[in-house]
Image 1 (cartoon, rainbow, N blue to C red):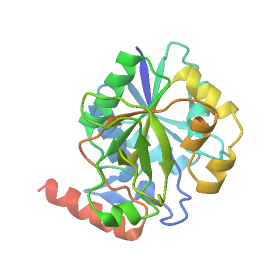
Image 2 (image 1 turned 90 degrees about the vertical axis):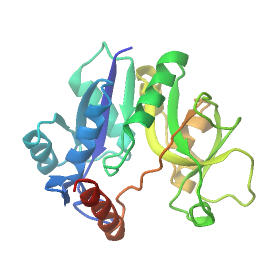
Image 3 (image 1 turned 180 degrees about the vertical axis):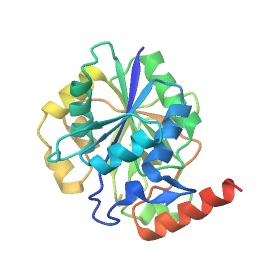
Image 4 (image 1 turned 90 degrees about the horizontal axis):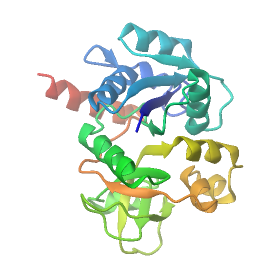
Length: 245
């Protein structure tokens, strides 16, 4: 199955403006992510962005980028526009990677892709074990509840996504914001209005569940931190600089 990896990115993040172009080991965060995506060998990689500065940076570092509209509500809408601009009718799967996670695990992305190719399900994502109570209580850590327990061979269906759960149901994991869609599923998803749950809980994936689009979950061995705040950036910078010594 032919796959494209598309990484939505923009400079206007509210908590850490300009973060895609912050540098670690002399390379911007977005270009680190691009190069990680290339390492997966799943398919061609493109960054989709509304900012010319991001396009210039990605191209300078050997990547491909597409300029998109400024008015998108979500990264998924941006990805959909990028695919339309590319005009690629031969593509069956789209992998959506987060532009602020330079520590994402290549093997986990490959595992999700392999499960989607094997099962031909509509939409897949990743989740990892919740390692401490702090993560469980943190509203910025999105949780996913699955029908069966997660392991390396299972690809169970998601029952719910939440920032906060009042009880501790079985089979609860930390959701990683990496998605793989069938092209037709992506087109259907962006044609739907934002659902009440999506707006209330600020979780785009609830639009899928509210419209009976199933989401299957693959187990991720690692749980990379994303760059949301200045503190995140300092922490990730330390890790990556240490690894490169």
